[in-house]
Image (cartoon, rainbow, N blue to C red; front, side):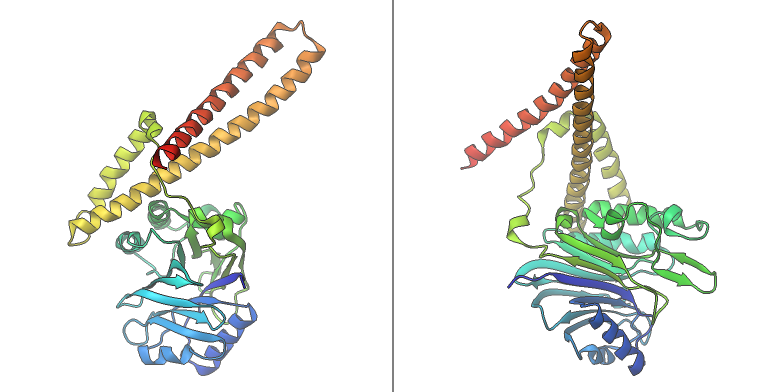
Length: 370
């Protein structure tokens, strides 16, 4: 029987103590957690096995060196997950699990970023994750940065915020990821971390999902800060991999080649990508494969934004035409009203013509392929 899945990301700030470990697992259970991505476990490889208790059926860990750092992904006994690829960072900074969740392909990623040099950390990580971009990505973690200092900090921005925010934005754009909580709460000020030393709050923990699957998100929340200096962050989703919502094969729209703004943007970003990443890994093939996925993310993001603007313009024109029609019906001799009405109709026809031309193109392509 189909059921929803609840994913929780939480920096637990050390879980070696058996009592704290019990409390953490109990609290996750009280939140009806199905998948837990926990950071800063401070556990060795052997100690990580102690997390398999109570509701936890599977434990995957990147413990790092000694009792520092460390990330783990806990899978509930209630759901099925079969890993096919496991990539665990030797420093305990990230863990990538690619496999099948409830019999559908997906990739789970748990991240604990350093508190400095986040751009140097995220760039090679983005290239690694690009290998899994053909499956839905579910990413949680403590990124140790704010996405937007103006609303994600309770205090003044830090000097490093601009660079780290730009690196985070580039990662989301290149992998076509959406910050789930901010999507639902575009202007709200809530935080996931409290610094006692600076008496300040910040939102540095995130849950990211492939943008093409945001329609499957049912709920997201930042919970209270307790048992740690970080708050748990949760996301409940219907199966991201539901066949009813499975995305169609992506195809490039040739019309974009006539868009000067698009061509300029892609040219600039391509130059930047190869300048930054050409020497980041030993294999040029890896960089090329990462570029193809990254470029697709740029194209999808641009096309989506353009479509959204076109829809807004179309709706505004419909409202404008309705208003002008009502006024013109009352005063048919007003030439200025008539002119404005005709111009608004021409503008709307232009948008509708563009949509119709693309619909016919898709129809011809589908018939040809069949």
